[in-house]
Length: 171
Image (cartoon, rainbow, N blue to C red):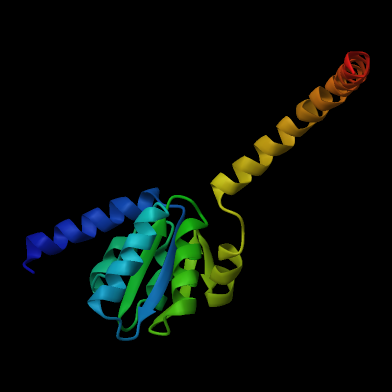
């Protein structure tokens, strides 16, 4: 890489870090290209990204963002999983690490809050933003559904009684 390419990588990573809600730092312990591709696909499906960059360039990109505290975790072969949803990147990284022993969760950050590996696991166990929205909508719709069911029950019972009388007279 020449100097211009490095500057482009740093500026792109810096712009991405300014927009994300969480960064998970993982250590690559000899993953194959196929395994990395599978991880990247799973990240994309969840709305997250996974990038492997040189640690020096990543440290420079972290400057001026809320994630400057992560620079101490950037040692050895590491990758950065990022997502706007605070749970998506952590969930995919933890799930992938469970099935693949060559990916280790080092830590991460959510804004200026630094997380260790256990903190990332706790974050991954939380429901995602879409799941929380679905639960909220379910809670809002439940009373209306129950009310409609209760008001329809007497009419349905009357209809069944009239139907029973009609069948009795027809027989």
